[in-house]
Length: 295
Image 1 (tube, one colour):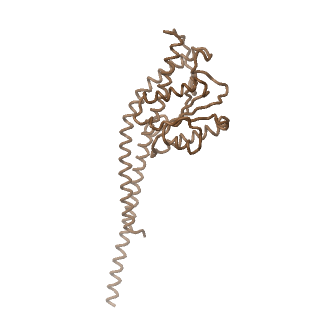
Image 2 (tube, rainbow, N blue to C red):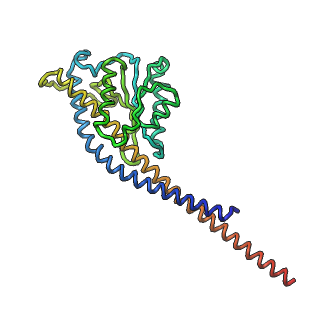
């Protein structure tokens, strides 16, 4: 029978853990509400702007001079993947799902590029950076502090550098792998093409082609509207991941708190049984002693 003191110590330990997980759940819930408002407000604007971008891309010629952001390669040789994870753990499978997708990309989609050393990564978040570093993969840049006090202005320099590397031909394709926020309990693993800009995005129907009157000129539109839209789409992906992280952490801490409560209940039952057995043994010893004295 387990020692009563050991069971008491374990019950107190689990209670302390439950207090911590419960507090973390409340903190994550507060952060989630605040961040969720941002993504809810941003999505309609980003969606409409992206629709305009698709329509504009369709109206442009396929030549590189018309749309430098739509330059496509028949077989992309130099690939850049932006990996968006969290800086901290305790958020369920949030980071492990991203890491599994990166492994899949390396082994299935871009194995030839990986073998030739043409597969590069940008890590946003410490967990993703640690994985890439441990696997000794090509890390172009890391931005672990980007998600701290996340704002559009903080993401613009990195988005600009990525766009510049594509324009100059350093990379033929740029993809973003992140968790898209659906609700507090569900995050959607997303592998999104960032560059080149496509007139028909993956999994979407092509929008009807629109004839635009360019004002002031087509060149100015390309120089201003397309980069701005791309920067907003990049910010949206980071913000989506940021909100999804808090949702995943809140859900994980909620489950951990429930598990701790159940464990405390089981330990308390075990403690009561052990205590009852100890009392019974003491009574038996007293009775046995009394009978021995009578004899």
